[in-house]
Amino acid sequence: MSQAAAVELVDIWKRFPGVVANAGANLRVERGTVHAVLGENGAGKSTLMNVLSGVYRPDEGEVRLDGTPQRFHTPADALAAGIGMVHQEFRLVPSFTVAENVVLGSAERILRRQDVEARVDEVARRFGLATEPDRPVWQLSMGERQRVEILKSLWRDARILILDEPTAVLTPNEADELGEVLRHMADDGRSVIFISHKLHEVTGFCDVATVLRGGETVAASLPVAETDAATLANLMVGSTSLAGERPPYRTPGEVRLAVSGLCALDDRGLPALHDVDLEIRSGEIVGIAGVAGNGQRELAQVAAGLRGSTAGSVHLDGKDVTSAPPRRRFGLGLCYIPEDRIGVGLAPRLSVVENAVLRTYKGHRRGPFLVGSRLTAYCRDLVERFGVRTGALGDPIAGLSGGNLQRLLVGRELSGRPDVVVAAQPTRGLDVQGVKAIQDLLVAERDAGTAVLLISEDLDELLTLADRLLVMHEGRIVAAFDPMDSERSVIGEAMAGHLADEGAA
Ligand SMILES: Nc1ncnc2c1ncn2[C@@H]1O[C@H](COP(=O)(O)OP(=O)(O)OP(=O)(O)O)[C@@H](O)[C@H]1O
Ligand SMILES: [Mg+2]
Image 1 (cartoon, rainbow, N blue to C red):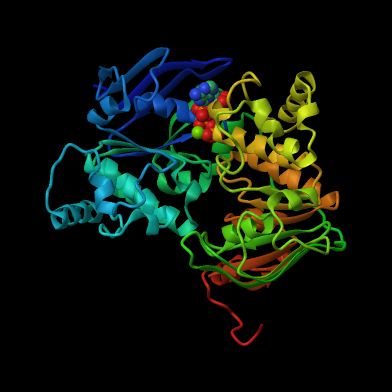
Image 2: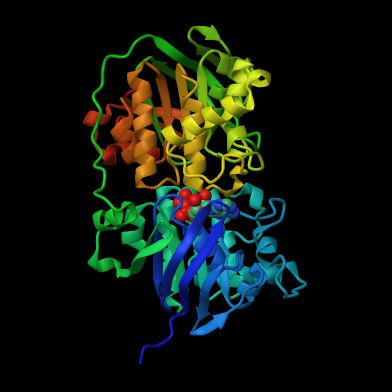
């Protein structure tokens, strides 16, 4: 009577040196459903998806599709069996068009460019994926790039689509659009596996949820309609959830970071910042709200010295650092938590220890004198204080989960006792506890007298943490709010570029 499910992962075990990533995990996904896989950082979600998509072979356990046991040796095997995976790091060729990227590597040969574009467009429309097949990928936003990744899987006729934290890089609107695309795919009889830490997306987009904790399935196939966000959060952490409460606020001190008349260009050489003025005082968190791509990223980079300005100035503690390199700014007490942790922040091939001192080493010129044992002790302390879950400290950080990488990075930066913190999306992609841990750290910094610039796409986070809230739109600061006394809808309007008081300012 019981019909075989589209996907069954049965009692999957996967061990890495020092870590059991999957410890008897189970997952059963039915046809025509959007299935959420939940769990805190390091719970084993990505590992389980890598088993399903042929990246890893499980140590034990079985993968079944429509009831038939499978043995995938490579991702290509899994793809041939109908499994498509949309990775968080997009694997697109920037100089190719959307259509070229979609068909790249697929067996099909279509000679005429217009035919390819027309067929890609047809598939895109069928699933409500708005794209322009003839545009080069480098011109596209994150949301658009992701749609190209999804199209690639649909082009290869994937019946099972895995999306690992797809909304982490999307704006709230793009995330909602993605939700609709997932629904189209399910209605078309496909199965979608959706990983996210944002519980409102799970309750909003998904039919069923499976929760992992410590590599095991602790709740299997819960109907979303019969549960709620609080229940899911409790299942993930295994204890009562953490209610956000606004920390008390004291009068700020002197100006630490001052930006005046700042203009800068983006990666494409187009104006990204227009005449930005900003002052952050000791003991305050100034939040920057805005839809991604409105200059927030460039503002953080110019403040940290990683991007040049075309006009205006940056002062740290009254000293003009407009053309000073990052190292000099770090020396003056600035710390920067970049939004892309791998690349700018961390070196994937180096060990946990090496990454933990990457910055201290440079900033304090202590490097050559840091002996092995002291280094290890320093690193062990950091890992403990900031709750980084890792195997051996000498192993490369490439094996850490996304959230644990972020904790390591934030811990390293904050342990340098900064005077000014520039934090870009510091809690992106973290689970409930990880978010709380990092938010607590930022508040503790503020209470110790640090000036904090917090850039976030999460309005709730800004409303909880910021003492003052500024909104950026098209490279300008267009509005300022008191987070204690502002309507979300009014802030949202400002984020969209609609200003209530046209006459003012
Ligand atoms: N290639 C690897 N080598 C060593 N350890 C690994 C490897 N991949 C994952 N791990 C470890 O296995 C555990 C599970 O990691 P996984 O990436 O599956 O977690 P996750 O649930 O996806 O977490 P996150 O929400 O932070 O992305 C973690 O402790 C991680 O450090
Ligand atoms: Mg993961």
